[in-house]
Amino acid sequence: MYLYLPVALTSINILVPVGLGLAVGLLSGLFGVGGGFLLTPLLIMFGIPSTVAAATDSNQIVAASTSGTYAHWKVGNVDFKMGLYLLIGGFLGGIIGVQAIKLLHAMGNADFVIKMTYVLMLGIVGVYMFIESIQSLRKKKDAAAVDTREQKESPVGRFLASLPLQTRFEKSGVTHSALVPVVLGGFVGILAAIMGVGGGFLMVPVMVYMLRMPMHVVVGTSLFQILFTCIEVTFLQAYTNHSVDFLLAVLLLLGSTVGAQIGTVFGRKLKGEQLKVLLASIVLIVTVKIIFELTMTPALLVSQAGGH
Amino acid sequence: MNCGLRIADCGLRTVIITALIILFGFAGNASAMLTAKANHDHITIDFFYHGSTVGVKGLSDPGRDLVIKITSPEGHQVLKQKGKVAGLLWMNVGTLSFEDTPNLYEIWGTKKIEDIVTPAEREKYSLGYAALEKHVVIEPVKTAEDRSKWFGEFVKFKEAQHLYSAGDSRIETTALADGHQEYYIMTQWPYQAAPGDYTVSVYAVKDGKVVEQAESHVKVEQVGMVKTLAAMAKESAAVYGFLSIGIALSAGFGVGLIFRKGGGAH
Image 1 (cartoon, rainbow over the protein chains, first blue to last red):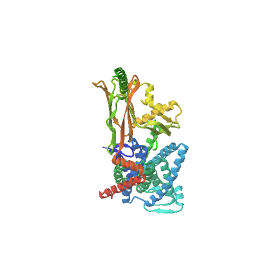
Image 2 (cartoon, rainbow over the protein chains, first blue to last red):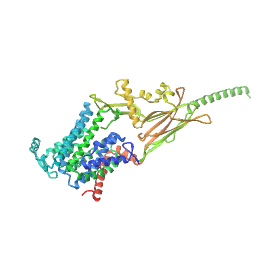
Image 3 (cartoon, one colour):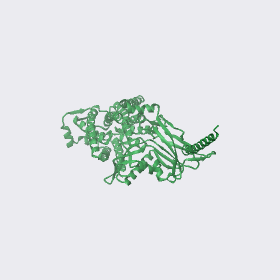
Image 4 (cartoon, chains in turn red, purple):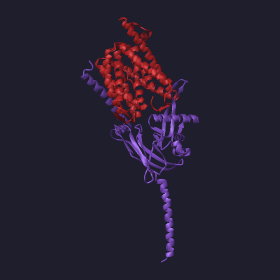
């Protein structure tokens, strides 16, 4: 059955957005990512204009992350305090990132910087996460019961511990200076604004490797943070670009809210390292896809203006 | 009475009337014989709209070749331009502006248009891509080859969206008993075509020249909730934004509660 989308000005088989929403919601619940880096290109592939695809994706992420945050909160996997600090940083970073994009556009090389940032960040995050989580899995297999990582005191760790405003994050079981999550959130916010994505796939590794939070709390906290980011983006897109398709968002969220719940249930059955290996694999597949797109001659040499 | 004068009067009147009949009779043949009618001239877009069909039919002089063109009003379109950076990576390298271009352009002939209309006439009436290319203003392009290349890419992009098509020769013609020719074509109206007014132009061609022209119109309009939502997105953007967020939050919580009740978690 087909439905006509009033803002996208196109007609779509309802099974397509519901199915895509379900798949991306599943990833959301499992890994704490919004899934915009997967869903937006898929929507464009199905004929949705790029501006509408990006904006409507943010709207459906609001639903999926609400559903996911709620499910994770019920099982005690959301560190609201950490999420709030990251959110403050992310908000400030977003403002800086938007200015950086304006500057890049004025210099005329915005697209090159955006694409390169995307490939490098995805590639580095994917490879690092993949190798680290495989090593962790092997260590556990070898019955090296002690997590040596926790016991190592690196120079970076010593530096972080020396910073002022040290505070305890009970839910995550870590102590950091309040400045650390704000600065890291700001860093992700800058990159997310430059790349035009929510930044979940960057925020998750930052929380795991730099803030040393347990993977399951990372997922819930990341979703909490993504929820607020996407509320802001949805409103701005609707208000300034008129590019949110309400009906498409409803179709997507029919799938994504259910998918997020299923993902949360599955996620609880998997070990943190297994989740990391899976997320790293998806990130690497997306990286390879982008590299192919960048190097192969495209079928069309012009595209709709206004999207990514 | 003054019969001689009257006879002369009558004769003059007859000559004038005969001349007028002959003159208007020919003019009528030349300009009013060709007719055009779209059978579905008001397409309404509701939630279940998935394109439509539009039939165009009419009468023409016998043996005439015909060209049918459906276009939207011409306007300004901006597209991103892809190019190679550092000789290796394909990415957006700028934007191209296409002036005086219709968003929808579809054309059919009784035969291949290049075989029945001279280049000058094609250019005059914008019949076919080559003629449209001469009419369109593309910026920025440096050379004629560049212009030709980017117009070709523009057409490929529009064809991929089902908004442009040319080269089909599937107008059916039937000779009628009264000596006229009836023509007919059934076209698929793409759902990608935006709401607006579209013009159906029919050209009768003789010896490579357009000798008659007729027009019909198709109006595409959003109705009901589709119209309300589209208008709200533009005219009450803040309310629309809050509504979108509110629905998303409610749906997220709602599904969360359903799963909780269903025992999905914990």
